[in-house]
Image (tube, rainbow, N blue to C red; front, side, top):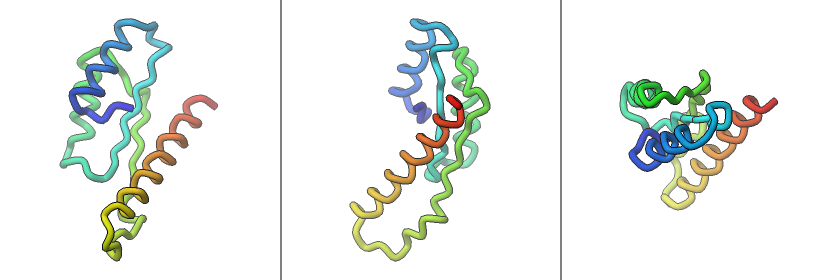
Length: 97
């Protein structure tokens, strides 16, 4: 999972250098909170490091979750996290099978 932040990008770059290219799969999920064009910039940054997303860019549609009625932030974060993990698992399954 590569968010585009320093930690995940450095981790992905180190894995890319330490392992064979076919052993590293970088997955970036646009979680709906990204700034305009930020996902495209993440992909460009990873390509500049020699990493490729293998065309896997998952779009996480937060609008479909209809969180506007929630008063409890913790409940909202749990809903977003659960859906984010589902999208990640779905993407990994598509890559593996």
